[in-house]
Amino acid sequence: MKIGIIGAGAIGETAARLLSRAGHAVAISNSRGPASLASVVAEIGPGAQALTAEEAAAFGEVVLLAVPWRRPEALPAPERVAGKIVIDAMNPYDDNLQVIDLGESSSSEETAKRLPGARLVKAFNTLRAETLRNGGQLGADDRLVLFLAGDDAEAKSVVARLIDEIGFVPVDTGSLREGGRLQQPGGPLYGREMQAEEAQAALAGLKPA
Ligand SMILES: NC(=O)c1ccc[n+]([C@@H]2O[C@H](COP(=O)([O-])OP(=O)(O)OC[C@H]3O[C@@H](n4cnc5c(N)ncnc54)[C@H](OP(=O)(O)O)[C@@H]3O)[C@@H](O)[C@H]2O)c1
Image 1 (cartoon, rainbow, N blue to C red):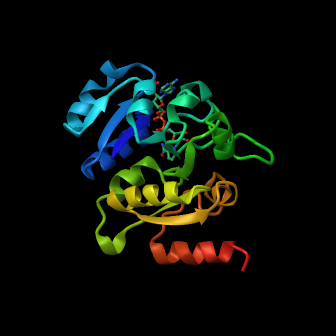
Image 2 (cartoon, rainbow, N blue to C red):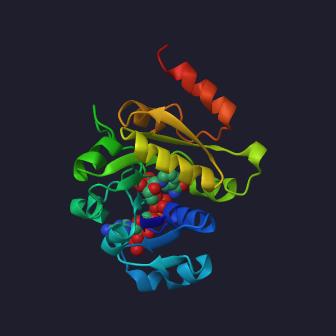
Image 3 (cartoon, protein in one colour):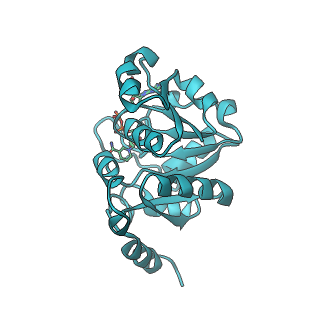
């Protein structure tokens, strides 16, 4: 698939490496422009290119958001991603790395409001970038779980396949609202490095029977 990545920091670059290694065409972007990413794309290989953020959003059949959530100006124009599968890896931290209080809402629900028409899936947000980078190397029996949440079943199945292809076990936590809350900072699944059985048991214990 063609995957556009907005943000080429710890998460964006790591995801680009994993997805490229799995055979996908990736375009990464940042705030400083494609030239600043020349050495990174050269290192990732011929399946990778650097574009502007808007170009990367246009390029991707799937678009991964890996910029600070507190910088909504970093998001692509809504019309650029309308109808596309958009993966929200962002967590709502402020400049002092404190979690932003969103009251009854959550960061991915706010992202969905900012990008109407996008087929939003919350994923890649619960593990540290380093764990993501190293986890992709684990053998089949040791694979770690990557959680995903969203309201579009088909979009979730595409993201689940990508997660599997990069060497993790996809585990669906439910809707963007309910599952997303389990995955967010302070939620019971946030930051947890788990294998499939443990994750399913944890999830079963969290959901009403
Ligand atoms: N790091 C982790 O372990 C981790 C784990 C899970 C989820 N997350 C979430 O993933 C997101 C990214 O985190 P990170 O650690 O990868 O951050 P990071 O290393 O600071 O990288 C942020 C990226 O966003 C880009 N960016 C900032 N403003 C932009 C704009 N206006 N337009 C285009 N690109 C812009 C930056 O580009 P420049 O460098 O050119 O400014 C940089 O490439 C955050 O929401 C974070 O909460 C992080």
